[in-house]
Amino acid sequence: MATVTRRGFLSLAGIGTAGVLVGSELGFDLAQATQIKQQLRIAGATEAHSVCPYCAVGCSIIAYTRKAADGSVKVLQIEGDPDSPVNEGRLCPKGATAMQLATSDRRVEQPLYRAPGATAWQKMSWDDMLDKLAHRIKDSRDRTFVATDKKGNLVNRTDGIAFAGGATFSNEEGYLAAKVMRSLGLVYLEQQARV
Image 1 (tube, one colour):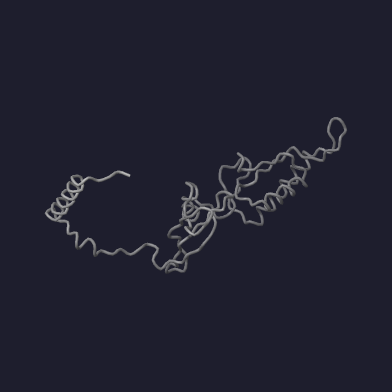
Image 2: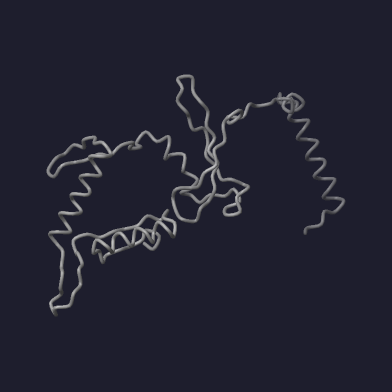
């Protein structure tokens, strides 16, 4: 730790005094500046505790929301939770941008489908999209299913479908997804966290 000499202390005190005097001469009223109180943007907001959606670390976040006059809920701020033992209030660069998930103008709020050869996307309901996905998976599996390999060994696999798990999967979700995909005969399984 650096030691401050008497001469250094007196010179710093002189510089500080000169700063106050010059500040008051230039129109800065320091007494009035200490009386200004600002209203916080999140004052009176509702706190919602959640988990960051980007990876499986499980960093805790706090979302501050306020109900608007039209009845909608507006997200005011998202920040790390200082009481969390996982992240202690800190967020990585991706987690720090979590507010954009809720407030971005480019956010897609329902499934979009673009037919082969088409140039425009069309909106679909979740039920229709899930039905379309199920049919596509079944068609691909039926078309590329291999029961035995060239040597006659029983393999029961499909080479036409691959699966990539999300980094936000918990251990249990990853286990379940792998079991479901293996039951369909998939051999190409990957995890986003490894990529």
